[in-house]
Length: 202
Image (cartoon, rainbow, N blue to C red; front, side, top):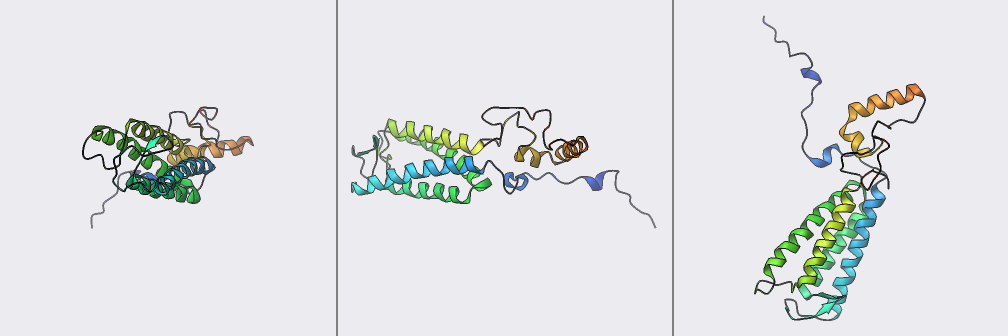
């Protein structure tokens, strides 16, 4: 009977998973940064939305009603409260969820800025956006993305960064074994001295 032998090393290879969350650590010290970003932004949006509802502005009113220097109406107020509560929920959960939520909502805020910029002075401007609202969307979007990507992306993440270790498990294991053999702290590789906004230290 003929036997089939698998190529050498084939049984050691695992398919690469493309889903972002599958190769992230369950918990990490950067969670505090993600929580702060989500919490501060969520609180700002909730306050803005509540002030808009208190003024009893029409739901789709496109007049000049302003709250905190921003144009608003009932629809934008309700939407702001909903997004703010979602961010506050991300603050409570923390970890990878808060990081991913910050990134996704940051992208949506930037996309909203471009979309509503195109809808200014048209009959489709249901959220009563003005140029200051567009700029606010861009600023909040960039801020959320910065908080979400802090310590998560970059070309010089330190080797004790949990995201780097999750993405390079074999090299991390080798460095850990070498550090134990030397009797020094584990997880510091050649790039371990890297510093900067994405250095992975909260």
